[in-house]
Length: 264
Image 1 (cartoon, helix red, strand yellow):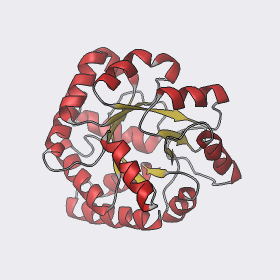
Image 2 (image 1 turned 90 degrees about the vertical axis):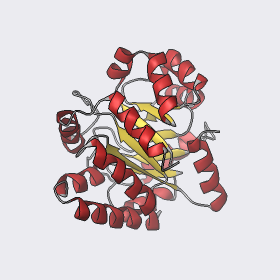
Image 3 (image 1 turned 30 degrees about the horizontal axis):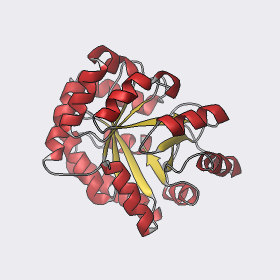
Image 4 (image 1 turned 60 degrees about the vertical axis):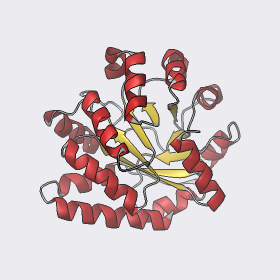
């Protein structure tokens, strides 16, 4: 059982939902990212997503796009992120998911990527532009290394796509709360609830909701329907705002994440 499977099992037993946090690996730099992971975990994050910076992040809004640019300028790369995860694993067993785009993984090679991820201590991978229809080869290799492959679903996903993501994916289902890019304004309505119920009618896997969520009251409402909530752009904004004052950064991030955890 992966760390992610174990985490959801523990949360379900305790009657709780997962707080999933996203930060970009290398923003403001990789040494600080390591410290941010510990701060997020201590403040209550159940699962931490590390974004692999990419030069053409088509699913991400300007906030995360700029964080990728900053990380790339600081020299962040997949190999350096694996080294970062290796360092984190010496101090923490918090579930870690790498989120990125397919091109860098294709260039590295599926087997090499999967082996390095396993050796470092990565628990799961989410590849934004790799649909379940085209993921069989990589999925087979990741499974052999005990790594979950998480798929995205959206309001426009067909019944067929939902069944494929549920059948081929592992760990959890990531439901994108809106059509568009990260950081957009979210309107929580009956449709979101019905879509989550629609997915849960197909699979017993946990369903987490992300995109456009930035406030404790949003987290509280979504957690009524889903098994977890993802916060990304709001954290990136805090990191960008306080990057030059790390003491303030960690205090601000800790307070904000603790408020989200309390609401979930």
